[in-house]
Image (tube, rainbow, N blue to C red; front, top):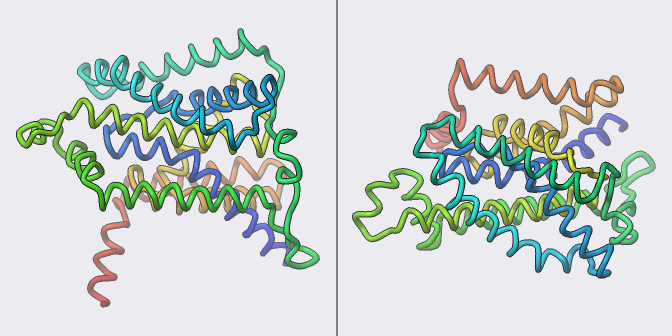
Length: 298
């Protein structure tokens, strides 16, 4: 029963990892850019929500009404000012540009807020610690369940948007061939700016849940980037539902590892990531093969 509880908690933790990896995976799938400032931008959103809650007594959930559009504008500006220009220099230049941007964001936050850790938990009441007891040994945290539900809705919503709307199809077409879409009247620059805005909107949501479930400081972004990157790679970079699966696998591995040893939380997660990376390098992506086998079986 205790082992089952570790699995359940790991699955719920995976919902958070999928949530924070959503924007990273989406940006890679659309623009083939690995945004190393992803974690720092999530922390920026967390601080914005903290300022609204601490100084103006605005609920973090209500604060998202302001922070999500603001981060979307940041994403569009980031695409026009940094990513679009740096992409002309090859694959490595955008990576270095976003790495430099992350350093700038981290240090600006440190200069403004200092090294003290903050949290949004005091501003969401009982939600931060309340849970549903299933048995004497198993309890499901309400915030963890809300995080998982949000991840599923967000990933599913983006997938539906990409598959069933004209704008979504334009984004997918631009991702496949940004030069050819211009022949049919699609403005690739605007589409990429919109895609970056969507990615940053998801970053705002993940930053909110990070701040509600744990503490954060100006330099917390690097660790969140690692978790997001691992979840995205395990599930298949660029696959939204794969990101959810990758987050769950990573969360379960860390939860089981923590039950074995105090250091097992990070060791098990990193080992799972390296194993998934090894399998993908030597055997390729299993997603298309599994779908092919499923069609044959049907």
